[in-house]
Image 1 (cartoon, rainbow, N blue to C red):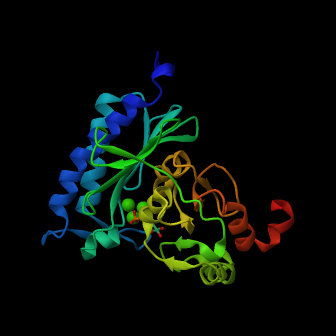
Image 2 (cartoon, rainbow, N blue to C red):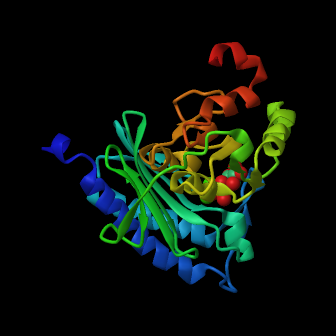
Image 3 (cartoon, rainbow, N blue to C red):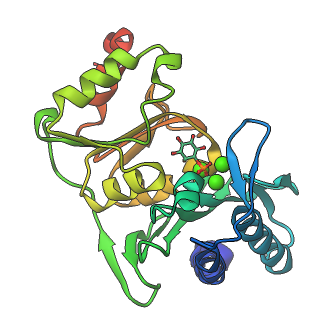
Length: 270
Ligand code: IPD
Ligand code: CA
Ligand code: CA
Ligand code: CA
């Protein structure tokens, strides 16, 4: 039955979608005729972003006609408990500038819970994925997969932190605490976007955090981090609904990081 086979067929499908989109985005990466437009929120979008989302949506409407879809560029369609969430290119600014740190994010949210995520970063030659209850993996394909696992770093003074940019923390009103986190830890780097979270899942980074993210920026990352043994919550420690901001850690460092970022929550978290 559907229940017994879990999300295996959906995971296979997400890989097939990623395979075809990888070929498409790679053919536009560093292309001289890339079209760049500015969206109403003043962020850039390219023809590669739109074509990738369009390709995924049209394949989904054929093979999963009853599922709903939410994508960054074309919004939401359909109703129902199963919803595919797509960020066609996460890291558009990198894509535009020729930096290889960008990925297509495909996820399935079932009854509000992100149950499957595939992150495909073809310019890095990397893919990460997970489905609920099966563990988290990296590799070229489902057949050539290695299991990944978060680190066991247990002290902030030994921890490595990665983020996307310094923007947004001031607006959130806790830039000071964020800078303190960067200073308290052993190492901080802005690996950016999806990469910070996939590095947490691999155990190469211990903490990733972001003050302003949309559901489509993070839905694929939630199962990858949690199935690798880590924790993924909001910056205030909520286990969902996802969207807004994000904190992912190896789990061990989670409450200490929450306490540092939310001094006013100290009593609640202890
Ligand atoms: C952006 C990236 C970035 C984050 C922004 C996102 P995009 O996504 O994830 O790291 O700081 O909030 O909008 O536009 O490149 O898909
Ligand atoms: Ca964007
Ligand atoms: Ca994004
Ligand atoms: Ca995007």
